[in-house]
Length: 392
Image (cartoon, rainbow, N blue to C red; front, side):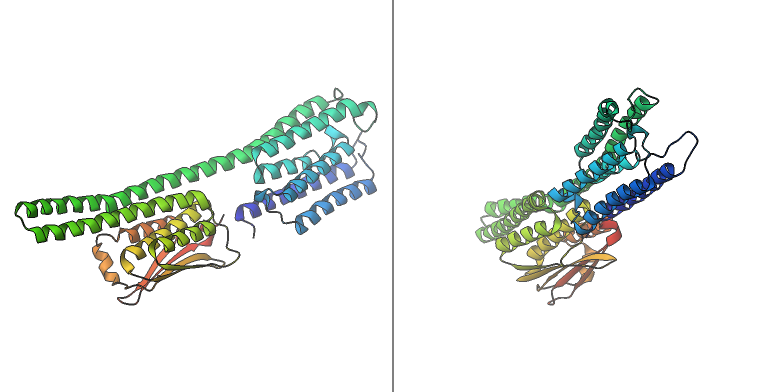
C-alpha cells in the first residue's frame, strides 16, 4: 500500500508527463513558417508510444516502493532517464520539443530518492547534450553545432533548470522533516519534564518526609515504627527504580526498532519478560504506514498504558490490539486487572499522571481517548486517530 506522499508524487509526475508529452507532440506535428518537423509522423509515434508503453508496463508490474530504493526502482529510474535523453537526442537535441519531458526522471529522483541521485541525473543530462552537440554535430545533420543559433544559451538554461529541479523538492522535504522532528523533540522534552515532576520528584519528596519520620522514631527509640517507615521507603525506592528503568527502556526501544510494529513488538516482549505479565500483540496485515511523529506518539501511548498496568492494575494478562479502517487507526490496551472507578480520576490521585500524558499525546494527533473500566472488571483503553492526519 502506497503512502499518501508517494501517491501525490505519482499524480504530479503523471500530470507533468502528460502535459510535457502533449506540448511536444503539438510542436512536432503543427507546421510553422521556416520550420521543419523534427521527425516523420510514424517514427514519432512509434518512439513515443514505445517509451510510454515500456515505462507503464514496468510501473504497473513492478513493486515500485520507491523509498525502499531497491534494485528494480533504480533500474526503472535509469531506464526512464536513458529513454528520455535518447528521445531528446533523436529530435534535434537542444532544439527538441521534448526537453521539458526529459526533466521527468530528474523530478522523480528529487521527489522519491536522495538529492545526490537527482543531481547525478541532472549532471548526466547536461553532459549528454553537451557531448552530442560538440561531437555528433560533426557526423550528422540531425544535431546542430553548439555555437549555432541559441544552442549555447539553451544548454546553460537547461543545465541551471535541471539542477534547480533536482535540488528544490528535496530541500523543501528536508526542511519539513526537520521542522517536524524539532516539534517532536520539544514535545518529548516537555513530556520527560512532566514525568520527572510527577514521578521522581514526588517520590523524592515522599522519601524526604519518610526519612524525617525514621529519624524521629529512632530518636524516640520507637523501633517498630522506624522499621515500618524503612519498609515503606524500600518500596518507594524500588518503584522509583522500576519507573526509571522502564523510561530508559522506552527511549532506547524507540531508537533501536522504529517503525511502529517492530518497535511495539520488541517493547512488549521485554515488558513481559521483565514484569511477569503476559502481553499479546494483535494487528492487521498490512498495517498502514504512519508518519514518524504519529508512530512515535502511538508507541509512547502503548508504553505509558503498559506502565500504568504494571503500577496499578495487578493484572496477569494484557492484550494490545491495533485496528484500522478507511477513516481511523485504533489501538486498544485491555488488561484483566482490578480496574477502578472512572470518577476517581477527577481527583487526580498521585501516580495516575500517565493517563493525562496519554490524553495529551492523543489530542496532539487530533485523536480521542476512551477508557472503559470498573472495579474488579479490568480496564480497556482505546485510542482512535483519524487516518487522514496520521498517515504518511
